[in-house]
Image 1 (cartoon, rainbow over the protein chains, first blue to last red):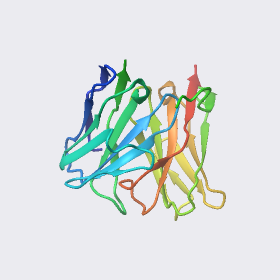
Image 2: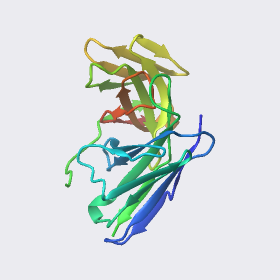
Image 3: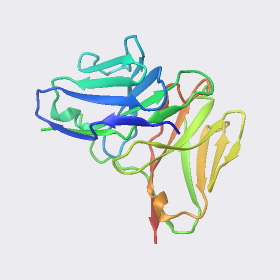
Image 4: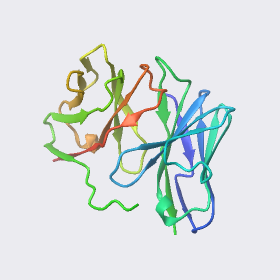
Length: 117
Length: 114
């Protein structure tokens, strides 16, 4: 399958600072990328959907000004957690697909463990 | 907020036995379903998928069964191995494409005992 790489895999930041997570599709062009958050022993919850060159669509309850998503190219999307607080500590996972609709696939990154201290 | 006392359902099986992991999905309009395996600290890995026009699909050591009447999905793993230990999630979506928004189930922790 296609490869999606997330960086960093782990990050610790101080409360009040911002942290950026990158999601790259290494061997295909991803017109659509999804960002998920996963708390311990819970399922993946979709935060937002981003399409290359346009603004991200956020799920209900997700603050767009706190979780900034940029999808400036067909191989890179970034999630910036602004003014991070301990409750933002979580596992953030991206997935990338070649499009939406029938017969498309999504490929997941390995996740980023964010710890806010 | 803080989630206290949340536990993933756990299925413990002996090595070599068959495992059956169940999932109830929520949206009767969903027409594409995927099973994922997630090892600790990693992203989900695709295992097998099934479209709503099928009720069974087989892969290597895995079988997915779909019962649309009761909105139930199951994953059967034959001859379970220690490497199968992980959390398993079902996911559902519409338009028969994994590139669409996926809704994940709650997950089941599979523990394989030697």
